[in-house]
Structures are given as structure tokens and as C-alpha cells.
Amino acid sequence: MFSAHGHRGGERPKKEELNVREMKFIEDETKLVQLSAKPNFLAIKAKGPDYAKNMKVISAKLNSLSVDEIKALQAGETIKFDFGEVGADYLMLNRIVADGMAVEANQHFTVALDLKITDELRRACVARELVNRIQNRRKNQNYAITDKIEVTLFSASDVFKQAVAENEAYIAGETQAVKIAWAASADGLEANDADGEAFSFTTVKA
Picture 1 (cartoon, rainbow, N blue to C red):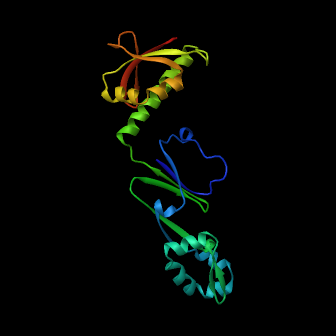
Picture 2: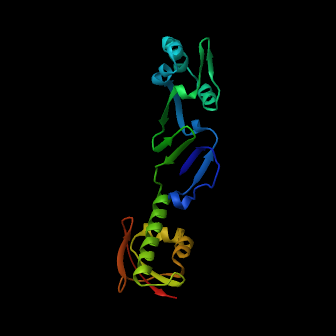
Picture 3: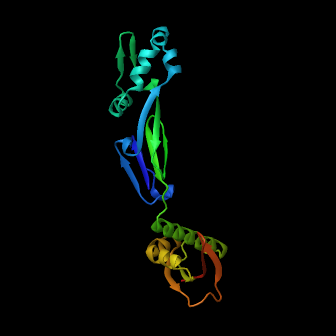
């Protein structure tokens, strides 16, 4: 699963382009990560001598920020001192990621990818690889883009069979197959595999 936090302007990426099963857009990145912050000392010193000599005061405040205060700074608010003010540019954000997640972020977006592979996702991967094998055969057989085909499959793998059953409409749509049939044996079929699941197949023009 792909989750994103941030500005939604422009066209959203398509799930197929990202090779993800589900996509969610959320408003609060703390639903994806545990957020904390610490002072960006170089940025603070570069602000000028008044900031440099008050580094301890600034650091104490920035080190004690709550999540809500961090989010307020990210939204454009500032913290005011007698000698000036500091905003999000003077923070170094730390995002603690839950097990099984991969997260990338910048000042505008936080993107999280759930890396857990369920059985359903594994079967979807098998189906995608089957589509790839059929498409390669279409190319090797010099089929025209508009040619409809019939696909014949054989496999002893229950995982492969279930993957085809669950994703038959997708497989047919991607490969222009008007029929997907099962053979009683692999005789006369081309041996291959999809994500490690052995199968044999052939195609003919419909």
C-alpha cells in the first residue's frame, strides 16, 4: 500500500505506474511516522550574532517542541524571542518509521510504502508476471496490437491457479485475451514461471 501526505495539486500518480495495490492520501503525516525535531545549528548561527549567542535558549525551546508545535511551524508559524524569531527552516525533522514501512519526505510531501507482502499481493504479482510473459509472446509471434488471442495454461501450482482465477479479468484485459483455458498437461506448451511459480502456456490468434 502507498500512502502520501502533502499538496495534492496536479494529476495524481496512477497505481499501475507505481506498481502498488492501494493508494491513500492523508492530511496528517503523524499517521505515517512518529515526528520529532531538533535544532538546525548551522541555520541558526547563519541567522546572525544575536541568534548564535542565544543558541542555548533557542535549542532548549526547539528540543521541547510537541508534535502539534512542529506541525504549526511546518504550516508557516514562527516562535518569537526577544531577539527575533525562528521557523521551520531552523528545524531538523526526524521521522521514526514503523516496522515494515519505507518512508521518504521533504518539506512538502511525506510518502510511505507498506512493504508487507500478503498472500493476495503475492498472487497479484504472479498475475502481473504472467501478463508480461504473454505480452512477450505476443511480440515474438508478431501479433498486431489489435489482435485478439486465446491463452492456454497449465500449472501444478495452486498459487498460480488462484492468481489467475483472482485476476483473470485483469490478465485478459492487458493481453487482449478473449479466452483463458486450462490444459490437462504441459504437452506442446512453452515452459515458464511467474514469480517462481512454474507454468506452461501457449497463445493463438482468436
